[in-house]
Length: 347
Ligand code: FES
Ligand SMILES: [Fe+2]
Image 1: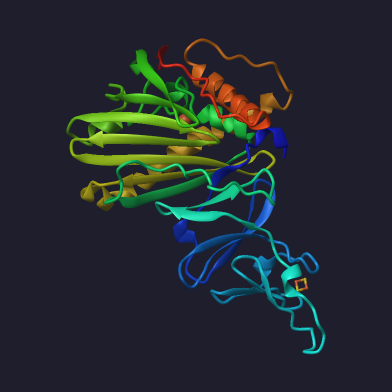
Image 2 (image 1 turned 90 degrees about the vertical axis):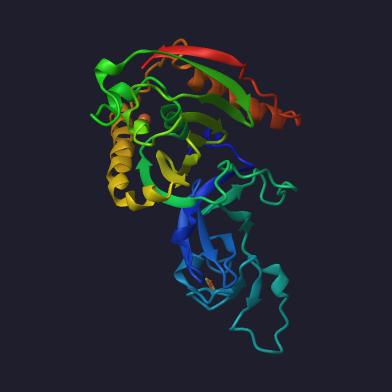
């Protein structure tokens, strides 16, 4: 996986919390690294390198009792912080300092129903305090409504640019319930810099977004992007809130995992969850299919273009990334390169 593409010292979405039951562990490759994710008996989540320091077998093949992982090869035991607690082959009179044996631990937290892992630049130098995990605003009393996932066969940069691209809607997501070609019209949206990214400031949604009409009440939406690859759309409909969290996590080279999580405070929406799922799936699959086709061209490494306002968010993404890396190399605070501005495009 080309390292230059992946930003470090940031949090990445690892799995929806519901995939990790109490006392369970799960092996997963994230950012090209094998991790074992788990939830202990106290419901706390953890992430360790999924390699036994004895002979390298993934610990996720072993047993977990909610407190310790037992390696499946020679039974060495490790606690959820990665410390070795027991080596069964040692005799009582054979002195061995267990503190010398440990598995690397990655900071891991569960926020709003999702498990995030922090990937440090340098494993021996974890920042303190750790940065904040991107949060959905105003959902305390809200339901964790719907989670979908998909794998995009592209680089993280193409995945993010696709995620923030305002001009592909009427072509990729053309359907009776969302967009039609006839509905293309000029749009003007205000943008402002926000934490490690930018925000399309709160506005009434497009008149051609039919699905919004079902919500009733006065509808407004705000879309925020934050490095490395998180997009949060917050829709307010009357007194209710619907939020979409989209995260992109590189698993391996050209393998980006997308999670789309919806939260809402509208009780009746929960009844319609089974009906909503196919729409969400279709939407994600449309994006995935176009990325798949794009790869055919990208394989020949062509020169690409970023034009005018419709591609400005893509340009900002590249600028944000560059500034993030530069500010770290120069050990200075991050200066957001995104201006306060209004962009105009047709979609
Ligand atoms: S390889 Fe894990 S205990 Fe030997
Ligand atoms: Fe899309």
